[in-house]
Image 1 (cartoon, one colour):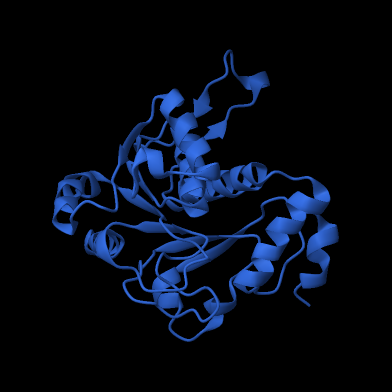
Image 2 (cartoon, helix red, strand yellow):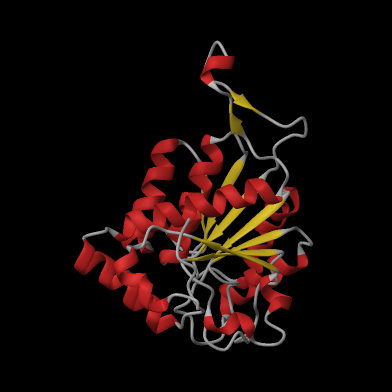
Length: 252
């Protein structure tokens, strides 16, 4: 059980992350891990294919009880920042549970920095298939990704998070438009890429998600009329922020 937080602005959320690291000593990678694992678990639930460990007292070996339906193919689309890093964590946990996963980075490998670069490195050493798509390539070259999107059963939007404050353009805009045209169920991480976190309005091309796994607290803009057209169903994923930091934001 966790404290239910009121909707927060991007600045309030940024401040929480910074204080968690500075005052509580919690690495951002740990918060990212909690966020990504929680989102992966919800995707498994949404797809109706949750895997559940069998009680060791009832089994001869450590195997997973799986549903009769096959596990869906998942394509995780990641941006170069922390939202992309969240997507990398989602991909890794889904892979560990047996889901077929492919990751597309809207960036060159050498352009990734910080936690996103760390996640890409972990995925590489784990043997997951990754495609690195540079922003500098032409929009038309994104056509090569169409077959990958078409084969997916679920798409995960890990392109851009709460820090986005201007319309997408170039390859970013073109990829969001292709994601929306895919007619696949989409899970957005934290908020749909292209949405302003504070106003809940599209800044331009914006992912229209089936569901949104939002981290720590609802975003301020989610209550704006029309925002639900982009977020779909929303679940708040608890990421392990200390109660001493979050209590002031409690939803009363």
